[in-house]
Amino acid sequence: MEDIIIKYLNHTIADRELESLEEWLSRDKKNELYFKAFIKDHYLIDTWSGELPDATLPDTIRNKAGKKKKTPKVISLIRPMLKYAAILVTGLGVYYMLFIKQQEEKLDYSPDLVTLKLSDGTVRELRNNDHAEITDKQGHTIINQQEDRLDYLHEKSDAGDPLVYNELTVPRGRRFNVLLSDSTEVFLNSGSTLRFPVSFRGEKQRQVYLKGEGFFAVSKNPDKPFFVRTENIVVQVLGTRFNVKAYDEENVTKTSLQEGSVQVNPVNTPEKPVIIVPGEAASYFTGDKTVTVENISIENDIAWTNNRLVFIREPFSEVIKKIERSYGVRIVNKNKNLENVRFYGDFDVDEESVEDVLKAFTTIKFFEYTLKGDLVTIEK
Image (cartoon, rainbow, N blue to C red; front, side, top):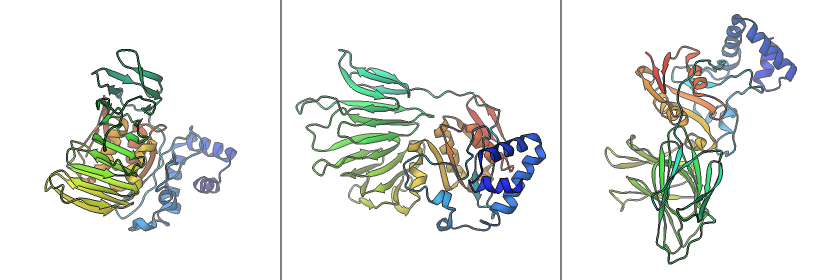
């Protein structure tokens, strides 16, 4: 069986051998414990023990940076009937690979629907799997919806028409995209609102207003700069790809750049703009009203656009926030000792439930938790 486990870890296992491994794991609890111990003793600790700098991350994580397509977890299984997730943990001097079966315990939660507020005050509920034409009160088609994206490219507007705005609100546990009339694409993360013009025609600049988190792929137009306005900063670009996180409940507004260059202007000190390049992030701190620039792992900040929950050497306090927003649940952490422990992980939100993620942490007793409605309580 050891040979089969090694083939599984190396992704060379055949279907027949995988069936044998599944059957062996389900036959006896001792087999499952042996499986975990074998991974820990022979595969992981011998390879990645001690303090591991970011530059030497395993290829399975490092090679994901910058990719837009959905990618598998750190170690992923071929077949869904053996439902495992993987997490790497650092900060305790040892790295663990955790393999867990899907937990039967379920949370009772159902995220609200995405809403679109039109310029006439009409509010429409949007379902991710809908294909529809959205009309105004007069019955005129103004927007096309294709599943989880709104398309404003076909909206007709003359240069003399007044500037009107729509407002897209994405609740916790949902994500949605909008293609603006200038071909700029915006991905909105959960708990976010974007206010934007129905058309930019006749305007000298393009401006949108963000609360929450959005990833922007801005169409190039040197004659008409694009501005993302939040409560504390204004991000100015001509055409590029970047992420802005500006949640009201956080004391940091963060701009992360994937391509091109952007200028970040603090609202309180617009005369002191900051320019960042790809792989950098500018963070505005509301407490002391300062801006810092740092090198980042861009995958940490943009993986959500592909419905992935990714954390690369992130403290548990930040991991909790990502889980809450990805699944629309609430988490209360009573185990403060975990706040600064850093984790690596990669989950497919479409395929793996919040219970799968939580169970990964409990496999080697990092914490226990209780469930009630949409609330997760992490115990000491």
